[in-house]
Length: 279
Image (cartoon, rainbow, N blue to C red; front, top):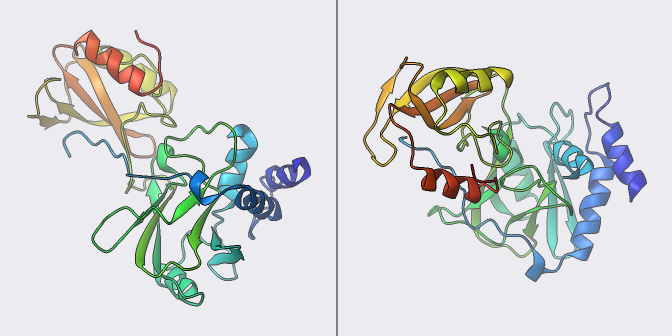
């Protein structure tokens, strides 16, 4: 097992990888062999909070299941027992090519790879034509810790006998200047402000925190913390207080502010929900 993982990590050295890692395949196969249907991890919903609007090696494997610039087929599909196990070989292929390849194994499934914020890179999100989450289709997750909100999937598994129609969206790392199609607040697990005590700090203070992380402010959402009403502004006083924020493309933030701060009990509750210590 260690040799397989070492091969996966080694593939991150130049030249660029252009084929599916054997180590990634081996790890997926071991997980599939050990996992019963009852133990399969579920994704009951996508959590995209948009106000107004694993292991080191496991992280390496999570990247190798989505490989750009393959000259062969766009997907790698193998049967493992009662499931088809799928890896993406070309992140930028036409979605029709994914669908055509999935049809060759009898699946009425479309697949779309979308730019996603860090917490959702590798997210597997399958839905039915009426937009209901499909629990039969899941990601494949390695053991051990994961630094992503939605798990560190290394592949997708679909039951061989799946007879429905499904659409799967999978998050990928965005290119510079590319807008995210799947994003969340900047302080959840996997995001740059996770467990950073920024709430009720001034705009000037938070601007410095963001700059340290290579992030600039694009705009402000001005909203009283307990209100649903808001206004968008290009600038606000540096003395105003920050209550939340999000990234909509790499290195670019929208910051939620108001002239008064957020009640401390709400700050503590939000920190706890994100797995962070209270202030």
